[in-house]
Length: 470
Image (cartoon, rainbow, N blue to C red; front, side):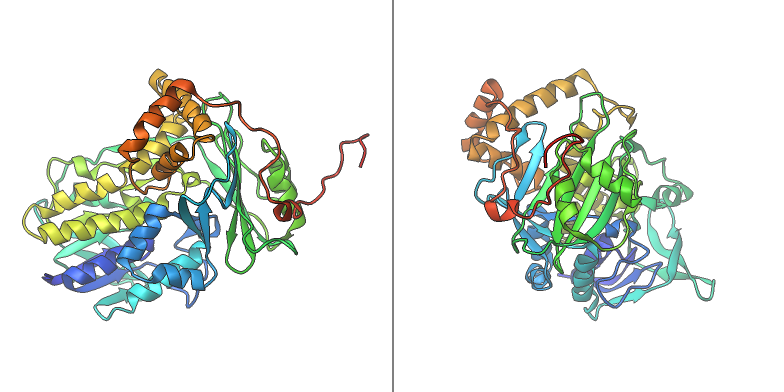
C-alpha cells in the first residue's frame, strides 16, 4: 500500500534514479533534483566524472537491478552489454597465480557506465509519477531535528532559491554530500566518518577490439597484491558494447599511473605480467587516457546517530563509497535501493521509521566496506585506519584458501559468492573451506595466461629484449 505524499530525491545519478523508482511505488509523486542536464543518449555527463572508467555490475547487483526494474538487464544486453560468466570468461592473475577458468558459477555485466545509466534512467524517468528538475542545486534541508519537511533549492538559470516541500527527502548526492553539515544545522550531532585511503589513482583509455578477436573475448585482470610493503599496481581490460575495450590501469600511493600515451603504455608493461600490454598493443586506441583520483574508502555513520529526523534518508555514495577496483559500487547502490523498498514496505513513514530504514541502507553496504578496507589497509602509507597484526593473519589465511580454491570448484564458488555480493556459502561447503584453510593449495600457477588458442592469437608480439632473438 502506498503513502499519500511527495518525495524529493537529491541527485539524479544511479543511486538517486533507483531510489526514485522505489519511492514512486510508495508515494504519490517523486521529484528528482539534478544539478546537471541529462544527455539524450548513452553519453558521459559532467555529473559522473568516474563514468569514463571501467565498471562491472556483479551477480548480486544484476539480480537486484532486475528485481527493481524487471527486464532492464535484457535491455542492456540488447544494447551490447556483455554478460561475463565467472570465472569462465575471466583471465585473472592474482598473488596466487592465474585463476582457473572453471565453468560459469556466477556472472557479471560489463558495459560503459554511460550506457547503464541511460537505460536505467529511460526506464525510471518514464514513470508519470516522477518529475525531474534539472539545473537545480540543493542548498539545505528545511525543518528541525525532529522532522525534515522539505529542501531549499536554487534554479541555476534564475539563481532564485525556493522551497520544495516533501514528506520524505532522500539525499543521493554522492561523495560530495553535505548531509552531515545540513543535519548539524538542524541541531543534530556530528556524523562520525571512517576513512581508509590507500591513495588509489587510475587511468582509463578506450580501444577498438583488435581484428579477429573472438566476440566472447574474456575480461583480463592483473590484480594488485596488498601486504607486500610495496604500492599496488593493477590493470583490467573490460569488454564493453560497440566492439570496444575499456582499459583501466591503477596504482596506490607511490605508483599512480600516468595519463600520457607513452606513460600509460609503460605502466602496462611494468605490471606483474605483460598480457595487458600485449593486448593493447594489438588494439586501436580511441582517444587519450583519462585519470581519476577521488577513490578513498569513506563511510559516514548516519546509522549511529543517537537522534535521526523523520522525513530524511541518505543513500548511495553519500553513505559509503569504496575503492572502485573491487567493482562493488553499482551493485551496492542496487542493494541499498532494495533495502529502501523493504523498509518502506515494512515501516511506511511512521514516526521513527526513517531511522530504521537508514540502518537497513547502511547494512546493505557493510559487506562491500569490509572486503575493500581489509585489503586497502595493507597498502603502504594508507591514510586513516592502518593495518593490524590480525589483518595480516587474515590475509595469510585468505591466500591459503585461494590456492585451495584453485583446485576445488565448490570452494571457488563460495569465494565468488562473497566477492559478487550474491549470498553466503552453503553449509555443505563449510567443511571444505575449513580443509582448505588447514591444507592450503598447490604452488601458484605463474605460467602462461589460460587463454584458448583463438584468444591467444590476439596477443601482439612484443619487441625482444635488446640483443635477444626475434
